[in-house]
Every structure is written in C-alpha cells, then in structure tokens.
Length: 257
Image 1 (cartoon, helix red, strand yellow):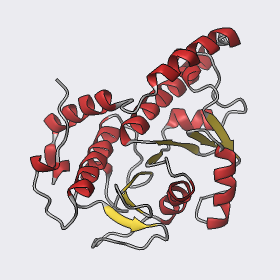
Image 2 (tube, one colour; image 1 turned 90 degrees about the vertical axis):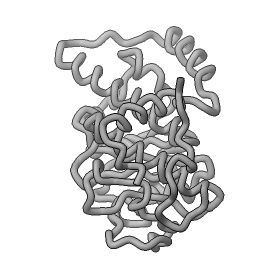
Image 3 (tube, helix red, strand yellow; image 1 turned 45 degrees about the vertical axis):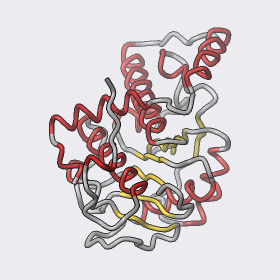
C-alpha cells in the first residue's frame, strides 16, 4: 500500500505551517530520489516547489550542498526576487533562481520545476532534431516540448520573456546546447514526467548509436496521445513518487530532518 508523507510523521524543527512542512518533506524526498537515480550534478541544478498558499514564495536547494545532503529543514524559502524568507547559512544559486522564478511567476499552474544536466537529456538538447518520436516514452511528449536557443548561463532576468514565450502552453522546455526544464502542476506530476523524459532521451541516444531509428507514424502517435490524456489526471505520478520515497526512506531517512 502506498503511504503518504504526512506532516504529523515528523515534527517540524523549523517555524512553518503544516502545509509548508509537507511541501518541504516532498521536495526533500524528491532531491534524494533524483540523487539515488543519478540525475544530479554535484551542487548544481535545481528542483523548486511553490509553497502552498503563497503565490510568490518557493523552496529551493541550498547552494553548496550535494543533493543527498538536502533535508526538509535546510531547503531555502525565497520570494520571486530571490530574497530569503527563511534563515539559512547557505546562499541561493543565481542561475537556478532566475530561471525557475521566471516560470513560477508567469505560470500559475507551474508549482514544481526541475532543471538537470544529465548526459542523455543534454545530448538530445544538443542535437538538431531534438526529441523525436522513435520510442515509447518520446511519443508521450509529442506536442509537450518547446525549444529555446542557447544564450549562455541563465542569470539575466531579461531572458525570462523569451523562455516563457518559447515554452508556450507546454510542460517541457529544451534549452538547446544546455539541458531540459520540466514543470508540473504537482511535484508528483513533475517527477513522473521527468522520469519518462529521462528514459525517452536515454533510449533515443542508444538507438541512434545503433543506426537509423524507426519513426512512429503520426496516426499511431495520435492514438498514443489519446491514451496519454486519459493518464494526465490530478494525481498523475503520485503512486510512483510514493514508491520511490519508500525506497529512499529505507536507504537513508535523514531527508525528513
């Protein structure tokens, strides 16, 4: 049976609402899951989560900590201008704040956002064709992916308008020559979308290494998308996220601190 992380399971060591503590638990678990699966790059890259009930406040990892050091209480709460709203001895990475804050501010529904530099997702972002409908997972993302040309490290606020424009009404933005940004209405949705996107890129890279891939015809993609839309319900990815949370909890439950 899938168990839910409840605020009552661990007393908050910091002063925050029960809703914020739940968000902190979920986000800390997410960082540990990504670390366990190898989807991190040292102290860099970011997963952010909007604080429930607070339009312009979200949680981000402390800059300088590895992802397996992230805990519920050491996540940093910041506003849309990067100002700390909670005490922390750690700084906030400017590149992570600028990019994520842009999407959180512009998109009411984008509650959870992740940006990574995994080799396979970066390789697809660096390819001319981008993600192609050549495998089970990539077909899921047809019509869900936008592209943004590389402009250097994302630290300038003025790039934000172009980021949002190139995303459009999609949930994935592939930063060309860089890496992907995925966002979801919930942390569960964001996690499982990323899980499938990572798989799609891994399979595409391996397939291209073997030779010419088989492209799925449009009529089959249409059926695939019809079935996909039936899956995208409010709790999409929740069972998957809880299952992986149980896994990392057995390995090291310190993320709850």
